[in-house]
Length: 589
Image: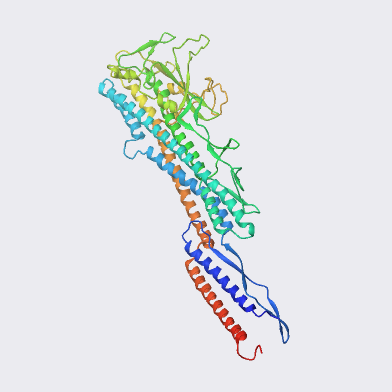
């Protein structure tokens, strides 16, 4: 027999189911604009039926509906795609920002940048070649040389500041990462506790997934869920979160970036795992972009250092090859009278010699005092030498203080000390010239100006007077001064190379700026491409998890009608029972 009050229970279940569905719909509508919220839906199922007698045997009568669970709509595969692609988008976005700043540093559009300074210095030598005895031309050359060194040092300082800002961003983001990891662990605990009774902590899970989305702004992550509902998060082979435990990230102690004299004038840092003291190398995201940007910015400091190094080596030696206006000279070991002119850049009496570290592919300079003979076993007289590269080369690029003396402009070596003659055998050679009366000669100024715009190989192949200097001072040598090739192997015949990669000063700078523009454009293009991909992925996620107003309003009407219908049916059944139980008829007599 079917229970007398079974129909009432059926309607009560219907009221409850529609009430829960209506509450869930309201929850969806009110959270339509909440970040990370996933649309929720009520899972309903019919309850067990009852058997009743009928004319043809037993009949099965339904007993209503039950709420099984409330489940959030989430596309797991779309989440995985988001966490794979978002770090790359943030990577390119951060790199693009750094490139924008570097491009501002190297902006030559207002004729106030490095290109203009190089051009002005070059032009001053061209002008001096035709007016070598003119004091104003000499002073202008000195001032243009000082302006070039000043702007190289200024741009280097700006690059250093940009590197320091990148490190400040890294420090801030490490703090934010630790907060995110701590909150994920807290949510792991709350979710496990909430779901012990079999329910699903949808809102807590949304909050945790939103934190994971934030996490993958900074680095690549992989996420797995255990049987209890806790997340395990890994990145770059390191477990950042494992259930109720997590790793703590911290910045390392500052280390000066110095090696063989290399010094970028900044303090370098790395990220460490506090528990194990292991260096953490982020892959993807803003953290990797910051470190890559720092490396890129250091590279541009090296490019400025290469220009400065070329001026300290080949340019200086060509200047010393000439005669100044007073014919300063000395006698060499063979008894020949040769020029004894000062360095244009750097310290007086110092020689700046080009060296090359083949293992690290870094140009640097060996600075030594040619007259230092304190060590009798040192046949090269190069005691107390110093390795310089990077910022140290740029710092050394100061116009010789001798030019600041009274009438110091007279030290400019505009006159040549070489003359091209043919021997009796018809072979052309360069011979040393006596100074004599050469105050108006500007030939050496021409040779110096050629270093700005004529390539290394062209100077050598054309047999120009400055080829002798380049051959002598642009040999590849290791740290001990031994001849090497580009791979670092010892050789007997010299391999010629220069700090500007065998390019002229102007061509080297233009190539560096062109490379900067190309790289910046490439990063911008990649960022735009990743933006398009992320738009598609976000739309994909929203199509599943997003709240659709039209759908929710339709559901609201449907569940409201269902609730009203169940209530009306319950009222009808109640009236029937009341009639049955309280009737004044024959029933009960």
